[in-house]
Image (cartoon, rainbow, N blue to C red; front, side, top):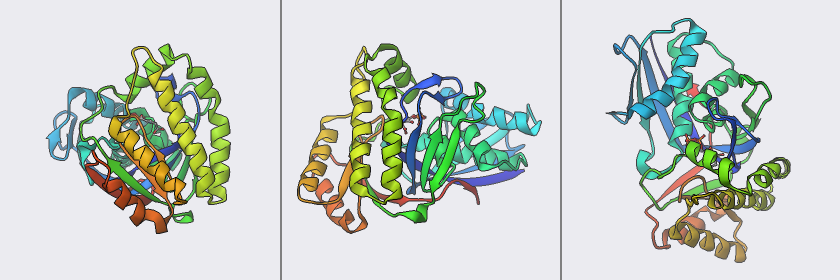
Length: 324
Ligand code: 2P0
């Protein structure tokens, strides 16, 4: 009647920004990410725990809009289980500050998919858990898997072949990820709204989508060679082109702040000194710095000196989502 799952956030090295079908979160291009130990969501789903669906995050009931989004995952799982109208109580806790503007939707929807399937007695292969998680948040389909993960866009209109695929497990390679937090408020424009605005108004959007296959090829080759320099080249390019595409929308969508740019400059200074490190950032101002393990202390200490930095979180490649 009750199941608990743990899932971790992921950070994309080749970014997802654009849907073919926004209702099913079917992407217009592939993306590639690393699942992160250090940023976890733990979710318990209980059958018969409430008279209607309820979702609590860190002890507080969520907004109706957030519940509606979670119910896309819950409804699809209930349909598979043949329990269409059974209400579920969902209790979710993040190990990292929820308000810190980090990717809580990826770990949250992945944990929700696994815990809901578990509570309903469904035994689904990871690919199917990944398609379920994707309905709640596109990037969540990657958090079902650990380590280095490719999201294959798929070609079926129902999305059944649009899911994550593990390229290498977490223990394959251990670069460190220094998460530099500069903002602790939720972003003003959600990713789904931002993606729709970009597709509708940015003149660069087609060029952005056309670059994805090349970026994926280079990123996969760099990871296969455990080559942080080559991975950094493609990851920084994918990140900056995504932000350029966002900034070219009408009205403009600018997620990076002056603090973000100071951190990017700080990473470039370290690179100039020969420190193996690169930056990336999602739809928000916080910057994630990848580096070799031996450079982690230096990177964290340099980032900590930059004005505007509120918090530093240490992460590294981690495991996929699982029942506990
Ligand atoms: C990604 N992002 O590949 C890209 C890069 C943000 C920038 O997937 O609305 O997590 O946050 O639940 O799918 C963000 O979109 O959607 C995203 P939300 P999702 O990680």
